Image 1 (spheres, rainbow, N blue to C red):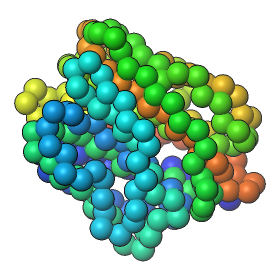
Image 2: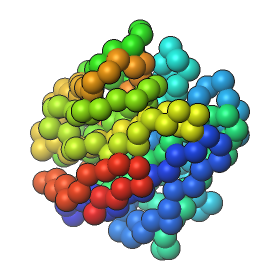
Image 3: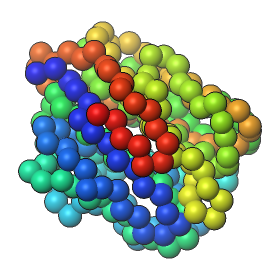
Length: 227
């Protein structure tokens, strides 16, 4: 089975938020990228009421913006999913993305993260090397201010981007890559206007025989979908 991007949805709010409903039929992995303010009260991270989302290590920027990736392997996608977070004063944003062709169990492989030491116009999560060929690599960045010209290198897809909104949410961007051969990567997000940021990357093993050629048909702003 070839790896394929299924669908995505986004949401942003100062408190509780809800992304979806989004049809993830065929997905063997769902990834959530979540950014929030650490000095607020986050009661619960991404939850769709059906699947269990495993949190990866969080990374916090100097402005107290936290980036965290979550994943659900072999999810129940028999009906459209609505993913919610609960909190107050967290100024959070969420991107939910589904993929097929990923292993149904023990899919998670590697993780790394990085944060700025102060305002800057670029960031990398740190070198990461998948252990197998054909792995799915996902990366997300939380941004503590208004930016423009957001891009990413190393062959990663054009980012989904939820812009920063004062008093509402931190900025958030998400991108992915499927490698044909396992190799070290350290993707660089870059933008204009210096802000503080934190970034995370994770890799997931492909199902046997999975190979992927990415096709991006549309790019985002808030509430944009890939298909």
